[in-house]
Image 1 (cartoon, helix red, strand yellow):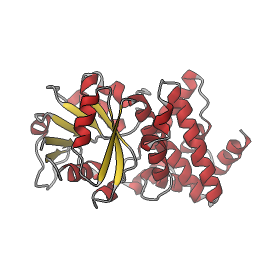
Image 2 (tube, one colour; image 1 turned 90 degrees about the vertical axis):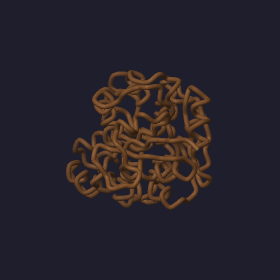
Image 3 (cartoon, helix red, strand yellow; image 1 turned 120 degrees about the horizontal axis):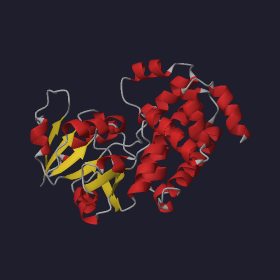
Image 4 (cartoon, one colour; image 1 turned 90 degrees about the horizontal axis):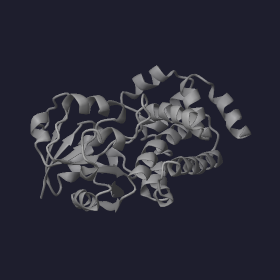
Length: 296
């Protein structure tokens, strides 16, 4: 049994705290105090050797700068995304504060609502340090099958990119384009994110495994997905602000879509689905995007 601190008490952080508490002593903290039995101060949480950080990708840079103190902790990052304003992957952001050998990243198909019900799934702990990956993997309960991988870049790309494809899938559903179109979109989305990842040195097998196809199929096919619901809102003609207000939660695919657009422009990368999602977030009509996408 290990003592683990979960930082971030949203739905995903709370679900992870529940899952990890089956075999470990777990405390949880967040910026906003919560009425939880195991809620502690940030200082007490940071004193733990093992940290699970579930802070959204667009917030983590400022949080680390303002709050984090490194004291040799081992960290499992439980967020997925690319920072919109810089185009940095999460491992690049964390590298300023934490040695690479102390870092790991959690990926795979995992709706918080199902984890909190102890429903089965399988996840991947990704780290360049196999010992850290194996240690975190061993902390999960029996209803979560864990695998390990050293392809951190591939896991980062897959976990972030699938949210953008999920927005596109939600638009497809909202426009009532049918299951054939949805299957075509998701499969071409998988090809697109794999091509993007390989340009950064990611391994092909990551994208056909749990981190890639597994998480993509889940996120791009259910209204339980926040990013899928963003797509439904776009298809209904709602503004980005209106969608986020109704959602009441962070949808990582939005920030990632902006990041992918900037990376594609700077590096001359061909990302047709991500490009159209970005343009629809900027106000382009879904019907016009569909026409342009089918013409490519």
